[in-house]
Image (cartoon, rainbow, N blue to C red; front, side):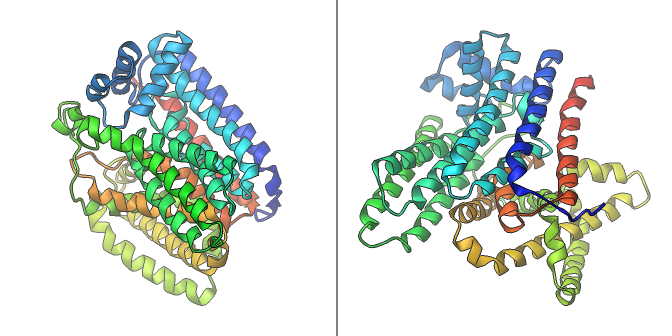
Length: 441
């Protein structure tokens, strides 16, 4: 069996349809069979019920208990009211519906983008990400947030890529900006979408024809103004970037959210992103030339070894923390495992970074790639301003998974059997993370 044999990349839509059909069936079974709250259901259902009963108003938004923006909770509450289902089940079905709309929306919009395979790669990465199954069948806010973020990004990049603005292009820009704006008030981490869009807009401005530049620029400015408006309104209502209850520390016993300098959090976020980037981009490792390979390995080893004493800060919570804790049962197992993972993460990140540089001409010709790279960079950068004491859960990287997938499949487009096996393993692990909740007491 040739593990490096290519699978026809045009088969990706059918593969996505099959994976999502399995995910939908799994989610429906979970929703029907598991009636008790699991994971974050218990805390999130409080806000869902509040919006379902009181509606959306300044008062109900100010009374929100949880840290994420209200849009995802309102989406779930709408599901409860529209489906007239039992509260928890109706909210879970609404979350599942957000993924259905996402998949259908990408299938409809991607062919018009000029880069359909890239957006299919983004969707595939989101569907197989280790936390995606849990975000499909439980009350995690990531589902609706990813829906608005990805569809907004697809539509907005289509609009900004059109050199001659038309009425249709203006409408697409407005819809894309509005969707990205709703994404920011679903999960505040999606704020990274806005400077990423502005950065892409500035780059495209330098390339636009002078005769079309005024109308094109008006479209970009209008769409970005619409994109930031929901966040401005939310900040005015909350008088901050998080709910008053979270800011006061009354929502959770152990945590409170705040705005403030946090120099460690961007490092932790980068480490978690690097960890999940490995299975998506590992073919980049094999593309290093033999002479360069040893230098990269040496650099990765030195940085990885230096990072070992700080492992408690870098893997405070999440899947990676569980892996290291499990291996810690062996003598020096935790330290050795962390060191190996750190070296792998750094080696892969350097290899992929070099690939981005080598393929920079391809990158600069593709608005979706530029947008995705900027989104990842601004996502890491915004962590600098996250104060309080809420840890960085590795689940948060799920919000970035479509953009990581877009980057990965743009620069490494081949879908080999080896790569398919790795993606399948990620998907099966995602299902295991979901169904373990069915057996937890």
